Amino acid sequence: MRLRFQFRPYRLSFRSPVRTAHGRWVDREGVIVRVEDGAGAVGWGEAAPLPDFGTETVAEVVAACGGFGEWTTAAELNGVPARLGCLRHALVAALAEVGRVPTEAGSDQPAASGRPYVAVAALLPAGRAVLAQIPGRVEMGFRVFKWKVGVGDLADELSLLDDVCAALPSGAKLRLDANGAWERRHAERWLERCADRPVEFVEQPCAATERRSWTDAAAWSKADDLLLGLAGDFPTPLALDESIVGEGDVERWLGAGWPGLFVIKPSLLADVTGTLARLAKARAPVVFSSALETAVGARTALRTALAWAGEPRAAGFGVWPLFVDGRCNGPMAAPFIRAEDVAHLDPEAVWSALS
Image (tube, rainbow, N blue to C red):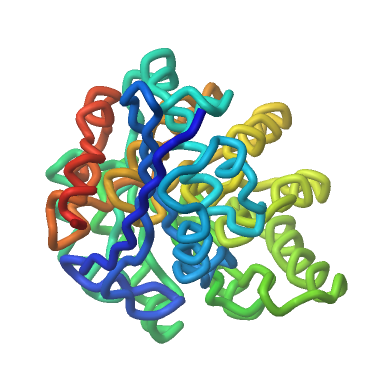
């Protein structure tokens, strides 16, 4: 059966700049895809690449989408190469909604048959601005917090850690996200400081390998060995994020005996179903997280989190309202996101906003 295929690139401004170790981020770029079958059923997907993580670029997504034409087939859409992982993810989600892919991604079943809600971690800004944000998040009911570090001066951020911990309510958990900013010496200083503080885990303390430039197996091994060594030397658990994007990453880390957590951004993975099946079989601890996508990608990612049968952990979806154009936001930041909140997300509204 022939399918109508459409796509719309977007560039959406953030309400406030997002500061991470990758730099100051003022807007989000990506592509929304729409698939319609002959019976009028419509499927939606979002390709939200993060090239700094090692994904394809938005330009590559747009070029690939332009090659399909307005009328195509499921076989052609399913033929997108794995190197275009974000686009492949978007197409799988859209095709699943029109019954053309035998996968849970993008279907309504995970939310209906999975958990009724997921707990959410509040995203805190980098630097001293974190202290002004905590009281409001505490009042909203959040008890898990994620603080972006590795952005400013090392000594300044280390000195802030105790102030941040003191501002949290009793029993709260703090996650530190370095986005790969630290070298070994800096990571060791942070992990020594975290040992007797309420830090649940440290996310990606050191850089992952650069997929676009590193072809030397020794370079991959050196980067992996650094993270494995840190995980074995300190009591505070570590989590992989930028290290889990490309084809085979999960298998490599499971094979290496990674003792920490896996942060899964569904929007960045070409094969979400297969990746989660391997993690479930290994009984690996998983934390689901946003890639700062629109409501279209959020809908698919949150359905995936709701369907997860493993141990529930607060997910990194406490990011909205994110965009100036409110029509493109996912569920408003709250300590819990319910299945019905996800069901109410309207891809058509995002599509119209981009017209």
